[in-house]
Image 1 (tube, rainbow, N blue to C red):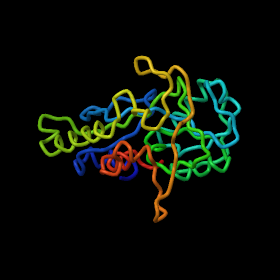
Image 2 (image 1 turned 45 degrees about the vertical axis):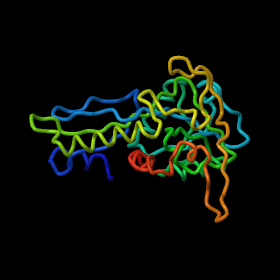
Image 3 (image 1 turned 60 degrees about the vertical axis):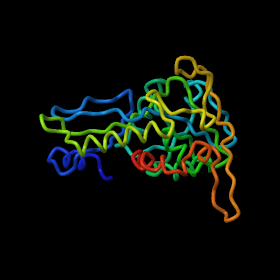
Length: 239
C-alpha cells in the first residue's frame, strides 16, 4: 500500500509484481505497453446525504448540494469532476477528507454530501441518520490489478495471487457489474443490472453487543466476519 505513482514505478522496475489500482470507470485509461490490467471489481458510486436533507432521486437534484471533496489523485475526485460535467454546473466543495470513515462522520454532521464507492460504505462506519442512495448515471469505481506482461510474466506465483484476489472478489458477493446491493438494502428496481429508480438504504441498522462492540447486521448476514471482506476492503483503500 502506498502512493500509486511510486508503486507503478516499482512495478516497472520489477520490485513488486502486482499493484491494485482504483479508477472511475468512465475515465479508465489503458495500461501502458508491457503492463496488463485485470478487472477485479466494479462497484457503484453512492451518494451519502446528511440528516434532514431531502433524498435525491435524480442527478438534477444534486445541483445545489454542497460536497465533501476527496484526495485529488483518487477515483472519487475524478468521479466528482465528471458529475459536475453531467449536471452542467461546478460543484460546491467546502471540505476535503482523505479517509472514508472521516467522510461519513462529516456527512453525519451536516457538512456536505459525499460520493463514495460501495465498499467504502459497506465496510465503513455508517451513522444511523445518514441516507445512502444510488442514482442512475453516477457510474462505478473499478478496482483493477496491474501486472507486467512479457514472455515470462506473470509467473506462477503472481498468477496464483491474482487468482486468489479474483476468488476473494467473488466470495464476498461482488459481481463484475457491481456490488450485490441487496446486502446493503440499496437496490432499486433492477432490470438487466440497471437501477431504474433510486432508493435510500433500508435496514442498515447498527446495534452493539454486550461488550459495546458494533454489530452491522448486513455485514454479518453475508459473512464479513469469516474474513472474506478484509482483503478487498484493504485493497479498496481509504481515500
